Image (cartoon, rainbow, N blue to C red; front, top):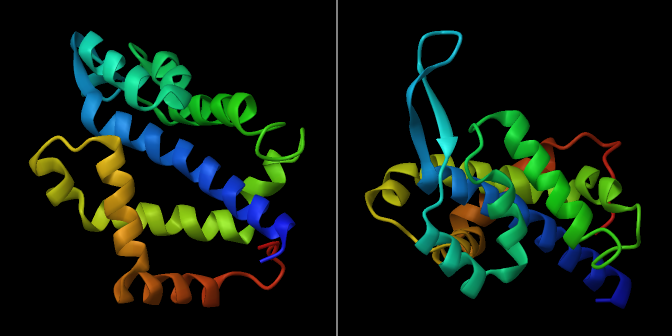
Length: 172
């Protein structure tokens, strides 16, 4: 594989890891805000990472620490998630894994869109299993990669690729 393609694939993995990490934080560290309700009367939810959790993240995933700090204590919402991932990509990927200012094209690429869709399918399909016990972020990554390399994961990836619009960026 040419060096440019390898760099691109690594950058896709980097951005996907940010998306996965934010999802992992929401999955395991979401809690109800005592006494507060949203507009529909449901309990408000926030991401609350205990001090020991932050220490482990700092130790095991220092590159992800800024994202954990960014969301810790904030309302669990699409806006919070989107902002955290975008800020992390801007600080940790743009200008480092990819040329400054090109991370948006990376996120829009067919390769990233496919990987992101596969990850979302995996989380939904394995939600019950993932919820049975706390799994470290590294375990999540390993389980997803194992599933993605399986026949089931490869079949799903092929289906997603076949459904992609023909005008999608095909940089890979």
